[in-house]
Image 1 (spheres, rainbow, N blue to C red):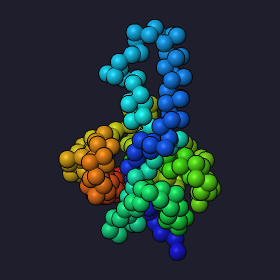
Image 2 (image 1 turned 45 degrees about the vertical axis):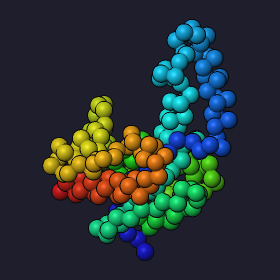
Image 3 (image 1 turned 90 degrees about the horizontal axis):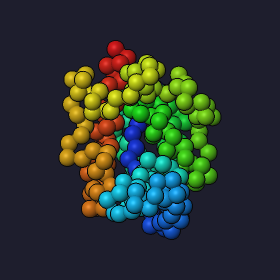
Image 4 (image 1 turned 180 degrees about the horizontal axis):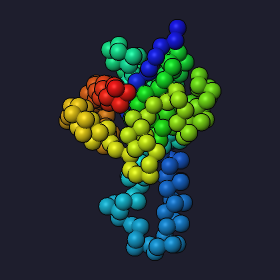
Length: 216
């Protein structure tokens, strides 16, 4: 049965321990190239922004090695739910595409640049075929994808607004409380997965409210 809108948001983590050897290999190659270009002194020290720790942390932005912790979603005006089985990431991806199959429109904030891109990358990694055949056109912003960040700028060359920024500009309460995207990894390491999932659901709720304002 077709549904109208599938509102969504994901939270991601850096690469797991089993990927660290591969990442160290890639990091050393990158470091060698930087040393040749900039000199050894410019690329040493733990506080260097190009340290391995930072290199690893940044994998949470790339589905090549980063992983999905949870997927928050809401169908039309129904209560927001979350898929969170970190030890079975492939199952989460499969579940998402099952939900998306019946959605008329996917709605999210920074959906094109991040959430859908990341899910697609993990789908390729796991061999899970997306249920949307037109997903390859995502950067053209098809009529079935409503990205509130892109919609706000209307394609004008300017920086897309963050979710909190746009929500507060529209008089909508901020979904960021004691946690935001930058602190998800620390919360995860401290075993606070439940709090992360609740945060993900708040982002979905906020996105839905912004969408309602934008569609009048």
